[in-house]
Length: 172
Ligand code: GNR
Ligand code: NI
Image 1 (cartoon, rainbow, N blue to C red):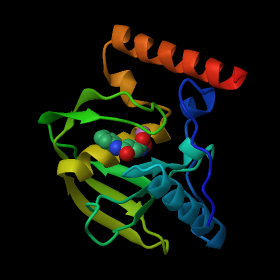
Image 2: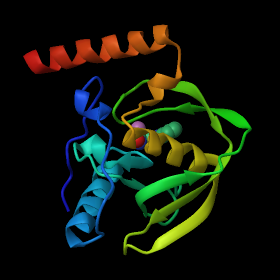
Image 3: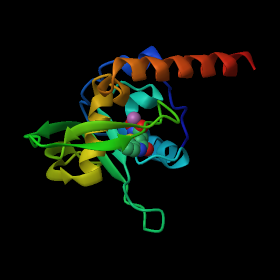
């Protein structure tokens, strides 16, 4: 497994719409393995393929607490079904928007349909942090970042700081 580089905003690749996966094969599993290792290394609780520059509809996640056994989860071609009309705010962060945290409102629960690591179809209910995280990751597949859900002023301020940091890093 290989740790891949995580793209950070305002990298234009993060704005691409990811393509459906045609087949869950060993090559795709290699990508998912790399994504999981990259996510654990960061560390983060979820990662979409586009965050490592691959525009495929693939997400990995692990919501286990630090003192628990790891619970890696893989979502290929995920779809959201009947999201709850009720929304709730959660303070979100993103590995592609490092060190910024803002409250985002999202449906409190939803059903999700996807293919698992072996390519088998699955359907389940997502609530709590799972619902927050899967919706955050699904946004990545559409080129959407959590900062797109906050005020334009806050978003521009964050993106400007990130742009500046990247310029400084590039010149060092
Ligand atoms: O690690 C992550 N934590 C997090 C916290 C609150 C809401 C969403 C997330 S996902 C984020 C990892 C990430 O950027 N996934 O795309
Ligand atoms: Ni993210």
